[in-house]
Length: 70
Image (cartoon, rainbow, N blue to C red; front, top):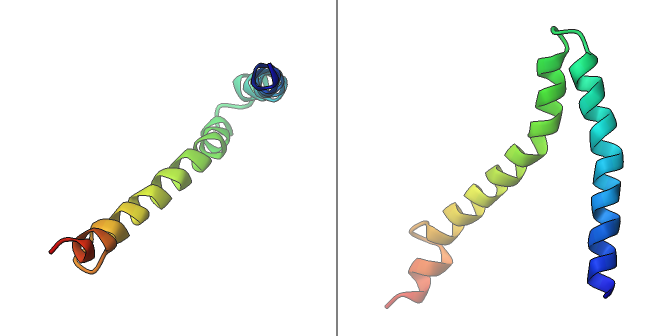
């Protein structure tokens, strides 16, 4: 029951933050819209980049995977 409450609260919070920002982005000048889109996409790129570097460290010749193989 608690997890459903957390999910509902998170959904409501995302909608309360996301819809006004999306409306603001849609109504912004066309010269500003790419910068606003970059602000939205930047956290996703940062997460992806961190995962790539983590996999690179694990799978590199001196990484944990190659060290555990005989």
